[in-house]
Length: 517
Image 1: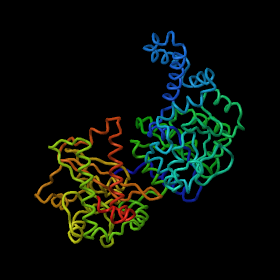
Image 2: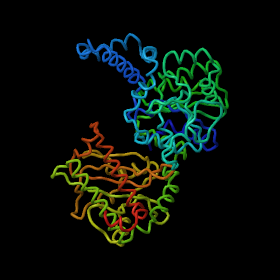
Image 3: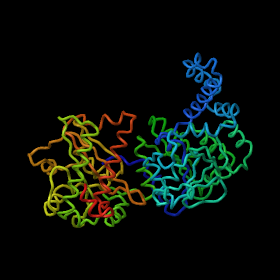
Image 4: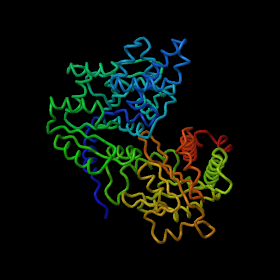
């Protein structure tokens, strides 16, 4: 039996607070970095670089001579000014265009609707019905995620508020103001060192009063996307020194794990001050952690608590009876084969690499719910053949008993891969499963597998899992992660579109459109 998860007690308490409507969430810059937004250091450095380059262009007599030295010059200037002083320097040097400079430094994509959203954004949006959401970020990513989940036609404005007293149900409250790609701002922007000095001098500033309210009101506050070195965490500690927490309130800070000895020491140190630290190892774990806070952690051997909701939503889109229908099997086979062919062509998969695509969904087998293989790109099946195949090829996704990478991917709502040589592809497999999970040739004809969960529904839940197998030990997808050209994001988009099509999208498009798959 494995060691108990040290986070479990905190997650259970946070779920209780969420269930009772007494949880408040503060979101920091770390959540936006996953969407390509700059870190605090990078933002200030970019602002300074822009100022130096702009000055060089205006003084075109010496700009060409200085151009090769611009990076070195701005770097030296940044080291002199310091991280917190750089933005002040830029603002004082060019007040009129500071907002447009800030927008340019923040947004690589000028169209709000095209801004990339991460699983963490969607999971926070899914929690917004039961928890007040506040942020120190300037960007509209959380509002955009809420708009997409709620069908608000991608209009972020109804989901956004400046810092004012009061608690909102699903509105994102910007404690430090906001800015859009066009430079339009709202609320009071808090960015420069002078801005933070102003906050420090006046405890009645709305941002200070709201922060105190978030942390000291009865219930609990959850902080995500910040580190203990964050200036806003330091503000929190300062404010709490003036107004300590009572027994009716507590703060939970989610942090990336660094070094276990130091992490354990800091956890115990802050716990005495009613500040509880929750560590995670990989950034990909954060959405699953938040989902457990929303739904509650599962007991060992039990299915995730969101399972019934996930199946009910999928049943409305694509009833389970369709999986054993001849026409649906034909459509699914053609759609999955088309996805495989597109992958081979667009990612230039070499001729010696053979890939196949499979779709798994949770289905009932008597009193047990398991993740069943309902269609793949290997062979077109009849409905009866599919029913028999699903009874033979299914996986557990119960807590602590997940089987294979697909079972883990579904239960945790995150991508998983297993490359040749590791034990992931056979994780928790019985001897019977090891002998039966082979191809019609009598052996397993693949060496590596990638499992991608379909996250859907207004509550952003795992709905299905699509797997891609390869006969190579270093399959094509391992080369996509290191590229900055968006290939991996493109692959994930194709997978999501295919899954949604097969699981009901064809019905909304109509039979004529389905014939074109």
